[in-house]
Image 1 (cartoon, rainbow, N blue to C red):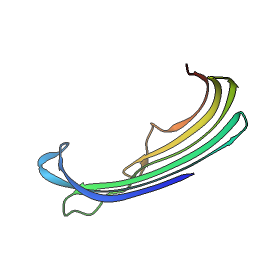
Image 2: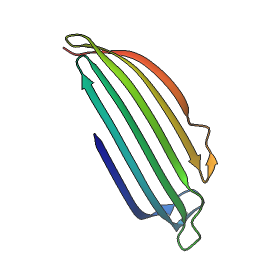
Image 3: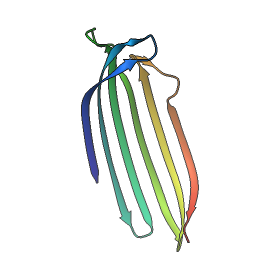
Image 4: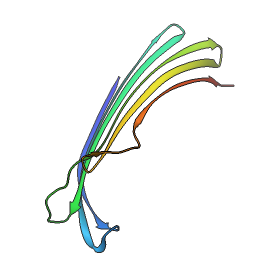
Length: 115
């Protein structure tokens, strides 16, 4: 099991609209995950929630930018050095409070081999 949290503020030049203006950037991220092994099977679940705000220095902070993810997987040890994996991932993205088109969900099936 693991949990992590970070929070901070920074300044950077506004490279999009006015390079001479400074941007005030505020952000935070929370990550958590858990993994459980029983015999030949490993179960894993993880979540990430990140949020950021960016605005011209001294201006009112804009709406949030955010990214939230959730994933889960089951790994089965087929033989020594060979594992099969089935997993799921979902992501939600927001840019200045509006839903971005880059989020979504997916299933994946795969295998890993180590020598």
